Image 1 (cartoon, helix red, strand yellow):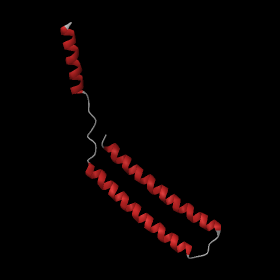
Image 2 (spheres, one colour; image 1 turned 135 degrees about the vertical axis):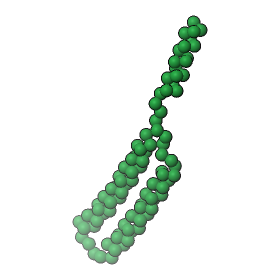
Image 3 (cartoon, helix red, strand yellow; image 1 turned 90 degrees about the horizontal axis):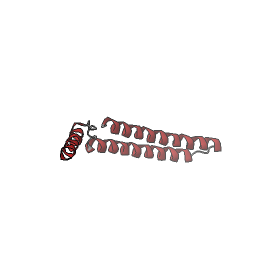
Image 4 (cartoon, one colour; image 1 turned 180 degrees about the vertical axis):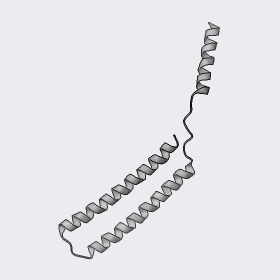
Length: 96
């Protein structure tokens, strides 16, 4: 009985030692650099959209034109957010 338990335990330990391990995750420095760059891009995009909105408010526009402008702004924000998600996911997947 003792030999069976001992051999089973030995096989289990050997299996854990020899099992493939996932790659080490990306360093925090890379992740921090990515997020810092993304924050900077978001800041610039917000400034540009505020400036464009201020310019658009100076001129009389039709309701359709205002709606089109708003939808374009929203589309830009969504695309930026989607690109940032993809970059973050790509960095995460490279670590696997």
